[in-house]
Length: 377
Image (tube, rainbow, N blue to C red; front, side):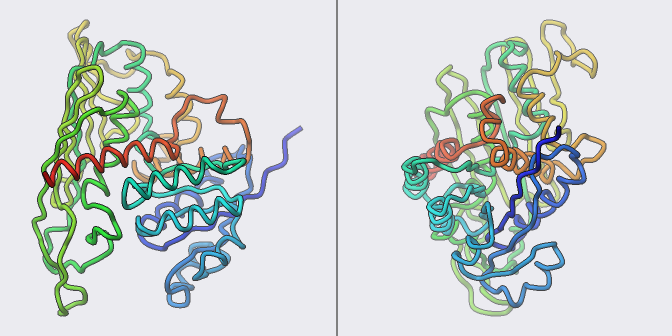
């Protein structure tokens, strides 16, 4: 007998680009997976201008467009937060007090203090509802395979690593000022926006970063508030590089930039005593593995059998032939994991700890905080 599906109405706070990516992922789930334990509906979008965006929100499949937190919480069973970073905590805490699970975009908050307060608020609840942070590189199958292969010793002891995430578009001096360029709302720039994915990926694969130093640059120091209007100062970084040390003694660098026009990429390279791995957004299903013992790059068919992390990630992500692109796929896998946790209490206890929980989000935020402090010094 097939168990009945649990109805889950998802409400999204914010209607920017990342909210649309989440919406694409949510709408694709019933198409990609026939055995979902939940009956997913798109309950509402919360926006500062719901009237102006109402038609776009309706066309995206949502039942309502609302303005206030209480309206969203009344309509939604679970809340997906895609607002500016400084607004995460208010809605998350209100949702938890109302018994609603939360999926929160990264970074967890605009500061370590706010992130820690969020974690404490969640932990203080008698029955904390399932909640996650959108640190989604964990849901690349290549990342999961690397996790399994490292644990099995296939690359030996990790000696060093280098990671970089390169985006473009921010060298355009006519680009308007936005919340992402305001430290009060964003908490940081390229490192907080992009680099936090790499910080979490390193800690997911290799363990906690114990020491971090950093240098940063802002290439465009002011931007117009409106087309042809007055300029406002940019208070965050366009480029950042963090030098890290791990408890094992492994060392590495993390680079994040939003000034890499024409060279968009996300890459994590790991170098061990018995080989190396390269994880890339260009090949999100398989890492490139050099096996030093064999003296060769390992081609498909010569790799180890799928381990527990690989099996878990493949169970919630699209197959390669139905890929919607590495970032949409990763968000889909992460959201799928969260919704299964809601629909099937105890399901996650049967799985390896793939998803980034609030403690993982706070741990990544702590490295952000350390890096920004180091750069200021």
